[in-house]
Amino acid sequence: MKISGLLAHFLYEHKLLNLPGIGQFVIDKAVAIPEPSDKNFADFLQQVKFNQKQVLRPDDELIDYIRLKTGKIKPLAESDLDSFVSEGKILLNIGKPMYIEGIGSLHKNKDGKFEFSHGQPMTERTEI
Image (cartoon, rainbow, N blue to C red; front, top):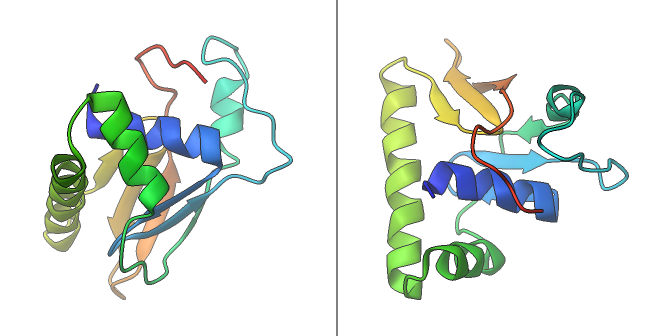
């Protein structure tokens, strides 16, 4: 599975995703996560909120999640996340959107702030 999909799974399970250099995605703890096949899943994605805040390091839980799901050792899991974030920042800096499957996309506005647009449900089957 692509790192983008793993980030969405992590967010659905933990309801919090911190991306270094990007910010924080949050789902209210009171919101129930529907099955991906549920017709209301797209409505659920409207519950995802983005806060542009300074995140210096990825959470250890996120690295462990990537490591367990990919079978890679911790340094490679960290490298995969770092590559994804770096590529996303490059896209944002040249005026292109950074897409995170199952979450949405970020765009950089003229003030240098990130704007979040809710995405579409994941095309891959999720096991939450």
